[in-house]
Length: 384
Image 1: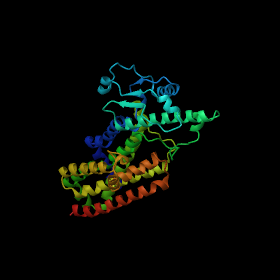
Image 2: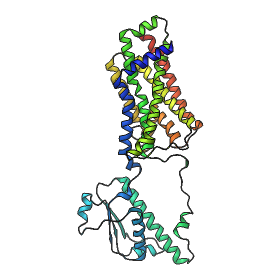
Image 3: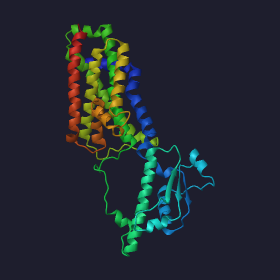
Image 4: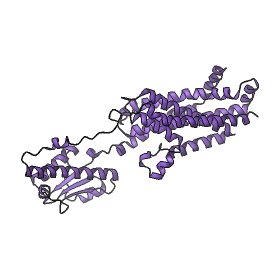
């Protein structure tokens, strides 16, 4: 009986081209657009910025600083006579102005007494780029000053490479993938796409209720649990196909389009399966509850998408949680989409195993169970 009912659901869904497009094409489009649009936010393109230098200090240390900068950022543009105009218009992104006395300041053991190195940027530069450039320039100047001062005191002073070996910097999940726009957007829109089954489930549910199909099946002895299970099983499978497609887009399609690739190296597949299954169960449970709650196609086409957008906006799907203020991050923790996103990020980004993923999966499982109980209660009212 269950097999026949599932076949009926799949046949009805195959005729719903708009629903299939929403389930598969929409998340893919969002992944591509958002990953490409936000690529430089996660990886600032510092080397690609057009810049020029204005040098008033030909000393050895000043030239050493410029040499390091040129090695990291490429050849500078020729400095126009009136460089303020090109800078203001954005033709030049920034100008390094080296004032007289930079070499002297870098060679002194005391703290700097005045600003002799200026970073002048175009007015529209993003604050992240500005801060990254300023931090890098400060670090290079400090490194050269340290090396010059120590060398002046001790002829056997270590070189820069040996001093860099003093500090080891690495991310905690060193074997996992690195955070990029793709790492955020693939799990985020995967979760969003899974929860969008609400629209398809509700639409088919209302159609069967209006035509009397549900009442006839129930009169033939098909119980409420069997009817709900026949609607849940196909969409659990569809969500699994969705997840595979979204991951494939991140791994293979995004590099072709010029984005970063999603790395699955070192991923715990059991934990990933658990996370996807938990998200899928929560999405299908919510879809069944809302399907039993709404009464018309107009309600189904409004309530489901609006709820999904709200949960996505609050839950870190559309705006990453780490850029939210503190109170918004606490609010995000109330969204089931955020639980699903955190479960996937735990696996894909932090190298988490099943035990690390289990708390998020448990919350999603509890939510799915609560939604299924609510659906059974509401379904009894529907069959009256």
